Amino acid sequence: MEKLYCQGCGIMIQTENQTELGYAPKSALDRDPILCQRCFRLKHYNQVQSVAISDEEFLDLISQIGEASGLVVHLVDIFDVSGSLIKSLPRLVGHNPIILVGNKLDLLPKSTNQRKLKQWLRSSAKSMGIDVKDVFLISSAKGHGIDELAEAIDDYRAQKDVYVVGTTNVGKSTFINRLIKRSTGENNVITTSYFPGTTLGFIEIPLDETTALIDTPGIVNKQQMVHYVSDHDLKLITPNKEIKPRVYQLNSEQTLFFGGLARLDFVKGEKQSFVCYFANALPIHRTKTANADELYRNHKGKLLSPPDQETLSQLPAFTEATFRLTEEKTDIVFPGLGWVTINRPGTTVRAYNPKGVSASLRKALI
Ligand code: GDP
Image (tube, rainbow, N blue to C red; front, top):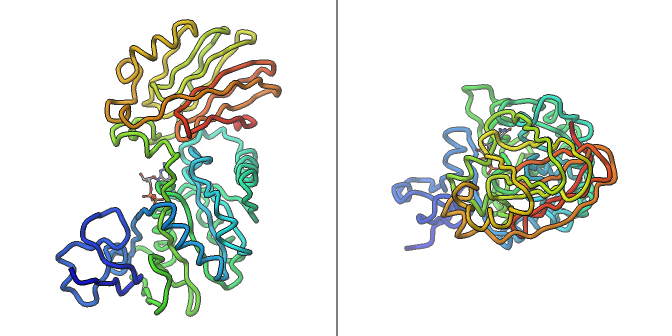
């Protein structure tokens, strides 16, 4: 096939893979101008579409932000902060200011302490070397916090461009579509002007005559639970509404399994409640720690599911980490799944999760 380029974003057109950059259906190749599906949808339906690229491609593309000047809006998924923070961001964006946005707020219990959540987001970013100017919590799906964020973006950008970055699945498209709707109303069509020489694969949505909001492709972070689980299992682990805490009164030497995707042993400490925050559809099993290894060996993928068979074939083996809790009210966070709140200091627990998706601690949010 002759090489064709999208006249919107400049990317080379391909007709094979719908979820990757530059895709256009064969039938679109005769159109004039030729647009990739992503640009086509933006132009005709006012919608941005989620596209994914590999880390290396992403690094190449996004390093161009370093040479530009503008505000970087980094979207993360509140349920998978360690998986959705982009470690290389500071290196890539140079001196441009970053604001951090935690999305999917609607899934957290109403009693969540938003101040603590913001602090945790900020310190999680900081621990990866990402210094952020400000932190916001939103729900792109429901619209919470969007007005406040949009106003802050307008302040922080100081009449410059805005780059929206995030890993896949954080809700970046949902977010940008909401911004577009907000600025155009339901029915108006935005005029997307295509700037010549625009960065490949970046989609520009004009903010005014000279500046734009730029949708960058979503980065694939292989160490995210979403990439290890089947579509079927993803539905079970992804909360689809506000999560309800499930409380277990445990003695030491008891164990909880979260499906068969994570495990928490109560190693030492007084009898107490373990408060579990996971998708309501994810089954939790309690057992004696002494029986846990055998239960896992014989029942993963069956009684202990998800994982289903497809997930099992790609899921890395468990690794474990032991934590001795020193503070009152600590959350053990399982990235991409949820967390467990433990109230008493002096408790020792052991957390198991697929290698690469490590559990961590934070001050309890609730
Ligand atoms: P992208 O890959 O970052 O562009 O993500 P999408 O916008 O395609 O969203 C990924 C998934 O997260 C979809 O299933 C969305 O419905 C869901 N999602 C996005 N924003 C929110 C939100 O604020 N709350 C909830 N509950 N789900 C969301």
